[in-house]
Length: 130
Image (cartoon, rainbow, N blue to C red; front, side, top):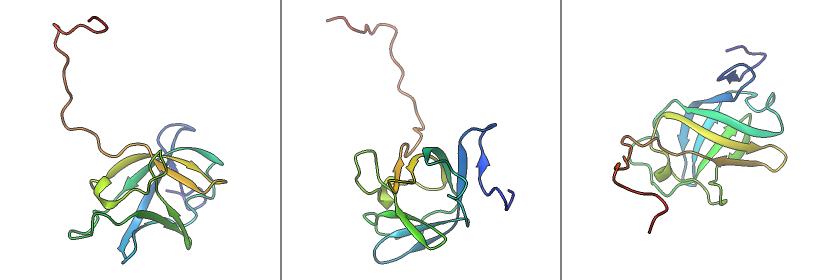
């Protein structure tokens, strides 16, 4: 990763990807620290991939909200409805899809966990018939 352009892209001119450098658990929240200048080269709004590199420590209260920290700026993470994302909703290290809007100070988690099994539809099922 270049220090001049701190964001990797998932494809040519595609989604930027940010990563955690550390996790800190406080009495009020769980702070996911991002690399320095992570948001500087992002457009005003869009989608990004977020890589959670570390596991949230065992025993952490599951009701604590998740916040991001970069260069001393703290930004909360919410779902699409505006409710803060908690430890219980982040299953662990992996890649997540996030919508961000820098002018509105908004970061919304779009995905939480990829299912390990996929439900299959029977060939005998019909759609739209009563």
